[in-house]
Length: 75
Image (cartoon, rainbow, N blue to C red):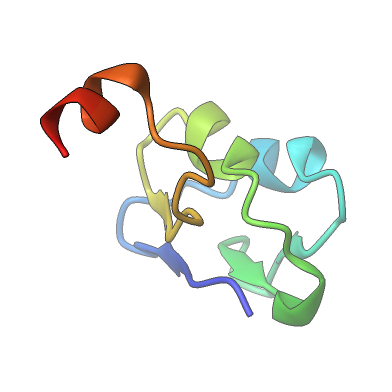
């Protein structure tokens, strides 16, 4: 399950995060604040955090699968 943190104090309820979510896991609650309605469906793509104009969303992104050439040189 993805960890999506939404700072409701910063959220203005514009709905951009929900509109860009490819799996439609986000929606606005009764107070017009973003919430993760279906966390098990989240693929941690980070689109919600990327497009949030208020920086109110943070996504625990999955670790990179491959090391960069720079990381391998340091190993």
